[in-house]
Amino acid sequence: MFKGRGGRPSIHRITGNSPDDFSRVTLRTGIGCCAHNPIVPYQADLAFMDTAGNIHSLNAVIEYGDFRPVALSRDISIWLREHLSYTYLNLANAAVNPDEGMILFSIAVDGASGNNYTLMMDYRFNPVRWAAWPSFASGCVATVLDSGRPIIMAGGTDGFVRKYFQSTRTI
Image (cartoon, rainbow, N blue to C red):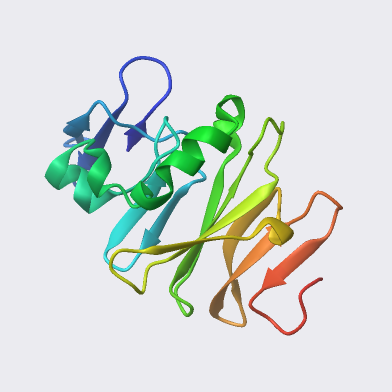
């Protein structure tokens, strides 16, 4: 469970097997998530965007805390700091394509009041590699099952839904 807005940001784990023995265990304080949509599973980990716009690995945060040099986005941190529209960070989205080994982040940049930019994180490499996909700008992205296979679909600001990494891109 991530707490990012209002109060002190923190990350918690819910333990227990029934409502009678549920409890909340604090894993880290001082770091939280900007919203629920930019949290995605990848490999044996979770990637998430914090309230400052940095993208982290949950395993690294548990191990090192909010230590910026181990953030997944450390290589693009200056670009994020200069371009993110922090007022609209709560609109950020993320979706994973496990077949391609990448995560797409849909974010608002350069003063936009909605998501207008797509960042791609390729996690097949260590450290991860980043690419800007401005021509694939979308309002939202999501991982969905298409014929039993996970794919990424994106909602554009033009009213169309697109299938990414497919030969037919619009539906």
